[in-house]
Image (cartoon, rainbow, N blue to C red; front, side):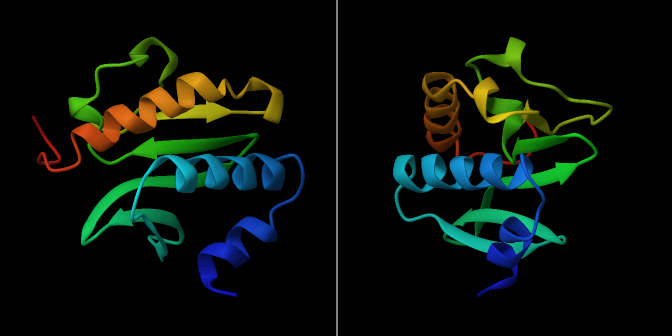
Length: 119
């Protein structure tokens, strides 16, 4: 088991279920994506470029997007939470996940994957 999988599997519920579900949707939506363990969290890469990350903190799971400055869909549902450029979808329960919104945001992020981190 690689460190990213270890991170996910060893989280307590409900976070483990949230992380596993997000992982499933990400890997079924984005082609040629690679799960790595960077910055002490699971981080998805497309080739050599960071794409998104999963982070369980306090009472939620963040799905953060590397090229968030270029995203255009569902921004009202995303949080910056004191960060200047990173945006994330934040979930406290499995029931909060709207798979349609999640898929649309992932596809939006994929469409800007070649752009630089900043605008």
